[in-house]
Image (tube, rainbow, N blue to C red; front, side, top):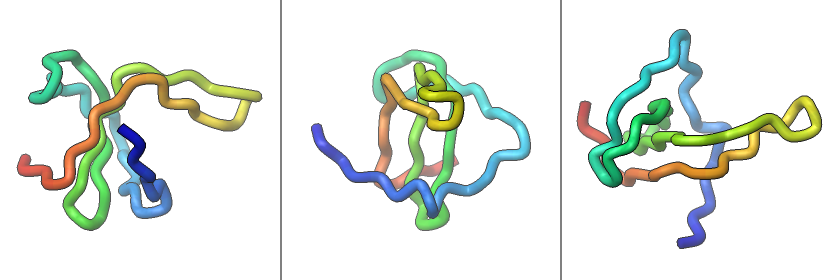
Length: 65
């Protein structure tokens, strides 16, 4: 699945919200977008000391908390 994500619309999190993903059941960090979408990042790592490369994540078009 190729989904283009606009990271400029990502809301800044003051603290990390670790939740269980309703889609795959794994634990991950919740990131909300300003338009109601959300992404749960399961694994990621820093590339070249400045870029966060996401290895595994789940993306939701509509997020209800």
